[in-house]
Structure formats: structure tokens, C-alpha cells
Amino acid sequence: MIPYTFSLHKIENTADFGFDPDDYSRFKFGDDLVARTFGRNLADAFIRYYLTDNLISGQIVVISSPYSFIPTATFAMKNYFVSQLNRWLVENGAQSVQEAKVHRTITYKEDYGELSAEQRLSLIGNDSFHIDKDFLSGKTLLFLDDIRITGSHEKMILKMANEYNLTNEIHMLYFAELINKNIHPNVENFLNYHQIKSIFDLEEIIDSGHFCFNTRIVKYILNTQENSFKIFLERRSSDFINQLYDLSLGNNYHTIEAYANNLHSIKDYIKNNNYKLI
Image (cartoon, rainbow, N blue to C red; front, side, top):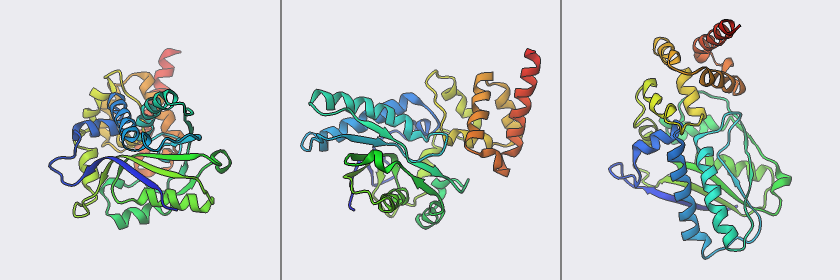
């Protein structure tokens, strides 16, 4: 099975990524405005460079990067990609897209973006991926992700496809792709944290009115040093704190020792706040 791979930005050097690293960093930490720009731009490019000459008349299914309970940053980008793509498809007599999810059981808490290609494959190889094979039957699959660095995630998706005996036409779509193999894969973390140097850098994004939770920001908050975390917590709304706690439980972060102290602080805050309301 050889998928069609498409990426909007090809990273050849670290002096010019083709996009603003600050924007990318904000996107990875929940800036929905940047997600909108990225998603629409990727859809427009895929239409221009592929669909215009290769219209897919059958049913398309768009699948965001795998996750368990909390979506990844790619999920927000996917929403705008789908909206933009649907408008073009319908105007050109094709069907609007459907969506599916790859369910992922994650076995690690390490920061993936800092690792080498070998370490990434070793780490992700322990995860399990599941999808509804019957729902996908006879449809064209677009797997969406924000960046392709070493191809480890792509290998796992294709491994899953082989295990499920999928015979679908498969497209792997990326906002950006590292094509210069002389650049270390940890360039991903350079981009991820380009604008986020501390937990307090998150506040502008959270308070912007265009914020959406994702796995990265939840893990980052829970992994913050206790004193900074408590100051940060005091500045957050009750709704934010309750949502943070519920998402953490949903992703089983309460079973990870490194997050235990901060989760305990959140639990105490919610308990005390509820007591005051009573």
C-alpha cells in the first residue's frame, strides 16, 4: 500500500520554514485562529495541486491525528480544513466529506518532539491504534496531521491499515514536512515551544477568546513546577479549571505520577470552590 503524500510547506532549512514559527507554536497550544488559517490554507493547497486535476467523486473520509480522549492540535486544524474542502467539493458536484477517528492508546508521557527518529519509532511502537473498518469500506481516506518529521506516525497508521486489511485509497496530508534529513528531528520542539517558554505565556492564548484545549497544553500545565502552577491556577476561571480536570481524568493523566501533585491541587480547588458556593 503506497499512500499519496501531500504537504503544504517543505522544510529544507531552519532559517525559513515557510510559515511563522510563533504562529505554529501558538497553534500547538490551542490558538484556534491560527488553526483556522492553517486548516484553510492546507485545504486550498490540496484542492489547487491535487483535486483540481484529480476530482474524487466518491465518498471522502477525513481522519485527524490519532488521540484517546483529548484531541490533538491537529483536530482544530481539521475542522477548518473540512469546512473549506466541503465548500469546494459541493460547488464541483462532489459529496461533502465524512469524518472518522483513530482511537489511540498512549503508553508514554515523554515529549515526542525532542526525540530522534529511532527513539520515536521505539516509543510509538508500543501504542495501539483502532478504527471502524466497516464504516470506511469503499471510501477515500484523508489522514490529516500538522507536521511530518520522521514518518513514525505515518508508519503506525499504515501498519494499522495493513492489520485491518484496508484496501482504500489513502492520502496522508500535512501542514508541513521536514525534507532535509540533515536537520535533527528535535526541530519539532524548536517549533512547538518557539513562543511558549513558561506556563504564563499560555495566558494570552487562553484569554484571547479563540482558545481550544488539546493534549499538549493539558500535559504542559500538569507538568509545570508546583509554585508556578498554583499562581497560574489562581488566575484561571472556574470553568477553565473544571474543564482541565475533567479532560485530565478522561485521558487517564491521574495515573501518571509526574502529574499527581498538580492534579491534587486542582481537585482541592474544585472542592473548596464548591464548598464556598454551598
